[in-house]
Amino acid sequence: MAKYDEIILKSEDILLLLEKLENIGWKYVRESSINRILYLSAVLYSFRYAEKDNIFKGDYNFIRTLSGPEDADIDNAVINLKANELLIHSEEGYGLSHVKHTISLSENYELKESWFDDISFILGIYGEDKIFDFIFRDPEYKNSLESNSVYNLNISSDNDTVKFLNKFKETFESKLTMKENILNNKDYLKLYFEYIFGKILRGEK
Image 1 (tube, rainbow, N blue to C red):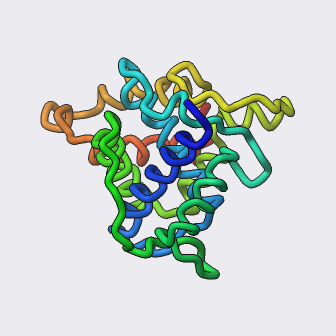
Image 2: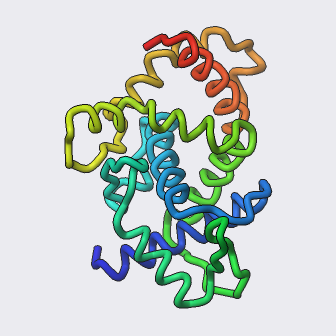
């Protein structure tokens, strides 16, 4: 994909994500948070839909930094959105200007719209600090940091974070009742994060 197309794609993703975050009361989001949430979205997609192609893979190249996972083109996408007056900026971060814009008709648009809605739901429940603490404990990110790796963070289903999450998945699902086994995606993620946070707090690996 050409660099311009990559920036446009990420610009559309940012707009879509900020729209969903605004729905849970997050009017402004810092650029570092945008990076982290997009990374979280990509990794959790591989966990939740291991049998499917990751809709973020091939479009994002996250590297680890001291402030968290970052994709260099996200900064360019933010600049593009500001230049087109689609984002406004304040001391609190970036928010939507609500200027009308063309809606993407890309094949993954509806999938991303639904997934960002699920991710925003989880952020709304657990809050930014707890979710971002999970990212910094994230085995893929942590192992890269400890090894001083400069390579891209893996967002595929074989990354260390998905392996960690899958480690507890079978036990978690065995505890679900028959009714809970048909949970929608939001409720599944809500219960699973409750379970995982409990494991993390107890220091289980």
